[in-house]
Amino acid sequence: MCDTLYVRHEGVGWFAKNSDRESDEPQALVWRGAVAGDAAARVRCTYIDVPQLPQRHGVLLSQPSWIWGGEIGVNAQGVAIGNEAVFSKLVDKKGQSLLGMDLLRLGLERAATAREALDIITELLQAHGQGGPAGYRDKGFRYDNSFLIADAHEAWVLETAGRLWAAKRVQAWAISNCYSLGEDFDLSSPGLQDAARKLGLWDGKAPFHFGKAFDTRLYAWVGGAHRRRALNAEALACGLVPSWQALTARLRDHGQHGDDFARHDNRQVCLHAASFWRPSQTTASLIARLEVGRPVQVAATGTSAPCLSLFEPLPVGAERPSSSLVLAPDTPVSASAWAAWEPVHQRALFDADFRQRLRAERDALEAQWWSALERGEAVDGSWAQQAADWRARWQAQARVGDWQGRGLLGRWWRQAAAREAAASAQRFV
Image 1 (tube, helix red, strand yellow):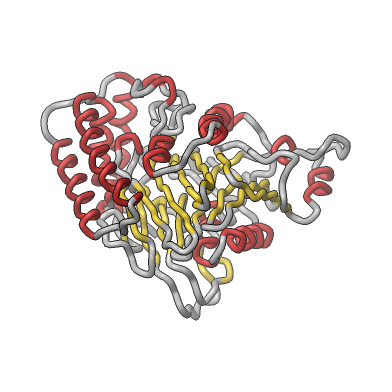
Image 2: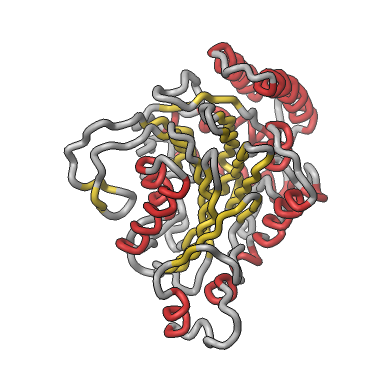
């Protein structure tokens, strides 16, 4: 489960995504540098090999520990991509091919523009298909994918069903774990409507509607996808003026239930796991500002729960950002900021005083950074140190005093903590 939005305002594109995965699945920001000449003919993705390209762009990738691809990413050329699980009638229930996260990474490594990324992803989709177990522990969890792809000039929504797809160029859009494209799209896979008719998914008489033809609806309903998408779409329709502060607020939105985490119901943009019916948790968040003539600007959490995390500004250029939030490839999970932050995240769920103090200090630090960025200042190396010091201070405080999560919510997170300990040896691939 995930939520992604894009809005273009006064010539600047703003992109934001929450990545929702299983609650104990580590995810971290990983920097993969540009490659000028690779002799390898093929590259191994999560499940299959595909032809490799000798030259690739540097990529900042938010990557689940066991997956080759990523949930969110930005490359050094200023292309940003987020993907979403969608549950189509054509999901491959047995085979293994490219995961949507693999397609995302391949698009970022190979594309210099949003349109080029769209073309690369759709070509790979039609050549190799998509599918395979996509859950960390739940290996029966399979899905197709939608994507929001943006650069400084434009943005595209790409939605897929098996090897079929449709895409629309947009100025403001929100996607979640349900289809958002209907009768109006700008590009599509060859023979899309004929294929839908042959599969018995369209009668050939009513206007062709991509979502109605392929959506299965049940997963989207259980996951609250339509409501989560509506929350972001309504904000855009009401004239959301994008800024760092406005978009962090959108990604932290809990709706009417606020911090009453036990009452959450999968219909919050900032998602908190708590039960069999709520297994997903927002495990990473990223915002990108895309402007012509300027390097892409990024702020990311690299940790679970944006409502309890710090959005750290990060430069994206030729070199790995000098931040403890960003890992080199093949780094152990135990060394990630994600793993170090989990005790803070889990205490803050249950200790209201701890949570209030954490947020007050975080909001003051973020406000300093947002003001500096709005004045046109570049990300300073001291900011990474401030962020590292802030995280370390709260990690130390999380170990002080007695606290215990109670009720079903507390039981869920104690079980999650035990699972995390058992998985601590995994690496980011």
